[in-house]
Image (cartoon, rainbow, N blue to C red; front, side, top):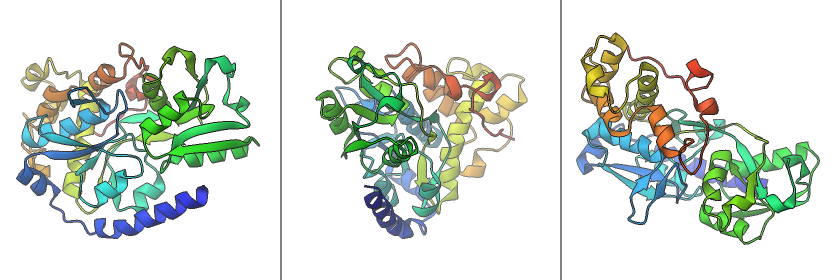
Length: 339
């Protein structure tokens, strides 16, 4: 299995040669067509998920809406392409999408071999395991001999191999291309364990026939920094996506919300005024109107609002901020300043 993954990565890397010479005109192309094309998951509640009418919502969706708001002043100037883990990088390299915002882990090989750039981390995650409560298992160290369902083309396969080898345990991998195929197989009893990022486990558990009968084990076996990805060779668009995320984090730290952004624009806080475009020329430096960040916050809110609305304690996922809280509150969320 590992050999197949490495071979696949090399094939994708070969396709990246054209991406490395990509035209530095993504912003012009986006403006010409009138919308941002955003690659998302095929349905992951809280991160990128369509409703019955095809309306997308989630943290990754809000990132793309924020980019649309920064460029057009309109968060709805965005279209979504649902992609499997296997398809996602090729779609970005080929120009089919402008941004990949799809629970994708930032790793060295992806950052250096595929002709892609990660624009930041919008969710710090880690891989975990889910089992049926009736199995009476309380630790991943009790999973020797288990059959494990997961997605192909992801880091989860390699992490499972490392974890089970390090702990001298046997396992059988049952892999599928599409996330819904993994969920359906686990729900049907075709495997004992479902593994993916812990956030994904909480999200996918909502799709099971009896969610309350399944538990997420406490172990986190990897670092999974998730974030948006763009093509290499276009620093301007890379900066736009990066600073849209940074703007939401800085806004939370400065106390700027959807409700008070207008008030803060005319306030006395110099950091807020620089961020919101009433002081300095920080928008024109990246090809945008100086009010770009104000448009982002008006459209999707600050990072805390995005988190709470999509995955926080008052949502079905009920995820605590934890490491995704601001650095000033013990978390890892920290953004460079606008100045």
